[in-house]
Amino acid sequence: MADFFFYGTLRHVPLLQLVLGRAQGALTVSAATLADHGVFRLGDEPFPHFASVPGAVATGILLHDVSEDEANRLRFYEGGFAYRLREVSVRAETGDMVPALVFYPDTVDQATERAWSLPDWERDWAEISLCAAAEAMAWYGRKSAEEMTLAFPGMRRRASALVAGRKRQADPDRDLSRDVRVAAHHHPYTKFFSMQEIDVQVRQYDGGMSDVLNRAAILVGEAAVVLPYDPRRDCVLLIEQFRAPVFMTGDPAPWVWEPVAGLLEPGEPPEVAARREALEEAGLAFGRLEPVGGMYSSTGSSTEYLHLFVGLADLAGNVTGTGGTDEGEDIRSKVISYDALMQGIDAGAYKDMPLVTTALWLARHRGRLRGTA
Image 1 (tube, helix red, strand yellow):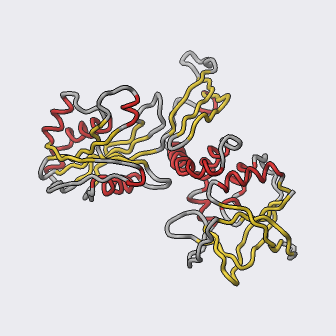
Image 2 (image 1 turned 135 degrees about the horizontal axis):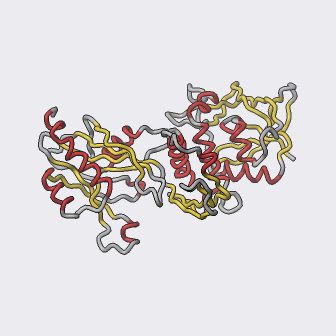
Image 3 (image 1 turned 180 degrees about the horizontal axis):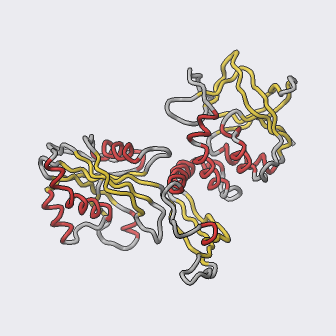
């Protein structure tokens, strides 16, 4: 059995327990330090970056008696972040120098002046990281660490959405701990999105519990949707792109007109995501964002939660859609009058639910927006 030294997020004991698969309180850890190394932040990234710094000391913990299976679980988890094991000598809390295994990044970053803080990370990111790690470790033994490298950004987005969902208002008439019983949780698929299943019993309206039901959902994350509107010119901007799900259902017109939209990055406020996506997809900068509401896009099949906005913008001249080149997006845009938009909705020309929803909200508030333009 080997000893491991951790200097970053795995110093957070609940995360370490989850990755190892150990029961609560079953860890044997002690304080330790690694000479000539530092743990830093780069930019706005919340995660630690390891650097070789002569004279510096990296503080961490020493995990004792790690079994071979636990070591493999650690390799699987850290391998997803392109970390590899290296043997070093660390100073134990007794003052003795002892051998330990440390996960090093493939590329050791240069030091910055900003030290990474475990308490700050625990305050802002621990809950999201625990949710993401739970999904990741459900794939241990079924996927490689390299496959997890590609899947983990989506897991973090879904984890952030899960944490946000937990903070929404509870149903005052129901107690989830009493009224919903989950017998099993399955993870049959994960990539950009995730498909998960549960075997569940739910309290019925007659007071009894249902039979065990198998239910599935596509786990997506949260998204920001914004319909650009120019109140002076009384026109909106729409974007069009190919939508694979529409094609896969057999629809002969899979190029769909929509508002600007995109998934929230972990910890990103919806308003920030809306402005970012508008710049990326249409080259637009909004003056004011008008909140339309928050809602699930399809409660029977998807976890996607939409933050809807109407964004006030100057739509004069040519507006060119570009899309995110790293996501394979191919987008075109057009500016149409408000009257043309509503005529198209009445004629059933638009099949995107967020577009119809934001347009109907605009119909209710158009007078106010034009009056304050």
